[in-house]
Image (cartoon, rainbow over all chains, first blue to last red; front, top):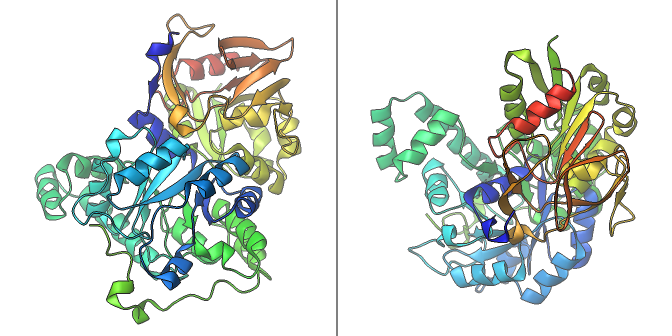
Length: 298
Length: 191
C-alpha cells in the first residue's frame, strides 16, 4: 500500500464515524473532570463546551466557540471522541476546531449565529459535522451541505423534551409521507420543503434519513431518552440534563443504560430509582421569541 | 445446514453488520441482532460491531455477557471496537479489561483522531485482489500470540488477524460493500 493512495475526509469516513455513535449517548461537558465522569458512565462521545446551554441562556450576550485551552484539556483527558460547537455559518471557528483535533463539529443554534444567510460549507472539511433540524426540509438541506449526522434541535437548555419530540415526529412523519409518493409527487414535495429532489428520493427509498439521526434539546431524564429512542432516534445528546442534575454520575449511567434498553420499561424503572432531582427546566410557553434557540438557522 | 449469525446489538454500527451478513449468507442462513447473554449459544458465529469500545465493554459487563462470550465456542467476527474487546491487553489503559478471547495487545486510536481516519486498498492473505479498507479512529494489534495468523498489516501494526474460527479487523469490512472477508469467515465456520 502506498501512502499517497490513502484517502482522508471522505463522505464514507464521515458517515461511518457517525454510524459508530449509534445507540449511544453524547454528553455536554465543560471540564476534563466532567469528561472523565461521562466516559466512565459509558458516553460514546463528549461535547466540549465553555458552558452548558442552560448557562448560556442565563448569561445572555454572544455565545461563541469554546476556548481552545478547554477543548485541548478535554481531548487529552478521554479516549472517546470529542465534539465541539461552532456558530452557524462560522467556518473559521470550524477550521480552528478541526485544527485542534476535534472529531466532529456541531454547527449549533445554541451559539449565536455568525451568518444569517449561509451555513458552513461542510463538504470542504475533513472532519464530519452534525447539524440540528426541525423538519425533513431542514435536515436534507444540512445533509446537502455535507452534514454526516442530523440531530433534532429541540429547545436546548430547557430540560423540556416537548420540542425534541415535535421535531422527531415531524421528520418521521414526513418520511412516511414521501415513502408513499410517486416520483412526480416527490419532486413537487422537494420544491415545497426546499430540499434537493435527489435527497428526498433517497430518504423515501430508505424510509429514513440517509445519515444517522440523533435527538437533542431538552432531554433531562432516562425516560426522556427512551422516549426519543422509541420515536426512532439512533441515539441522544444530553446537554444540561446531566451536569445540572443533583447526581450527575448516577444520571449519566442511568441514561446510558436506558438508551441501550430503550424498549424495556423494567430496566428504565430500575435505573430511574433514586436519581435525585433532574434539572429544573423551563416551560416552553414562557420563553420570549428572542429566547427561542431553535429558530436560528433555516 | 442453515447457519445462524448473531450481531451484538448494544451500541455501534449494528444495522450495517446485519445487512452485510444478510447479503453474505444469502440463502445459506439467517442473521439477527442479540442483546442478552442467553441468546449467545444459539449462534454458529457472532459479530462484535464497531462503536465505542469503552461503552460496549461496560454494557457487556452490565448485561452479564462477559463469561458467556468467553465460553462461546463458535466463531467471532470482530471489527474496530470489537477487535479491542477480543484482546487480552489494551495499551496505555490498565483500567480497561477486555474479554481476553484472542491473545493480542491492541492500541486504540493507533492512527490518531477522526481527521486521521482513512480509506486504503490493502493486501490481505486469502484474497486474490486488494481489499478496500475503511479505518475510522482505528486500533491496531501491536503484539499477537504465536498461534495467531496475521492476514494483513501496516507499519503501525497488525490490522487483520485470524485465530481458529475468530477473525478480527482494525477496519470496517461491513462499510465497504465488499463481502469477501465475510465469506472467508463463513467458510471457516463450514457455512
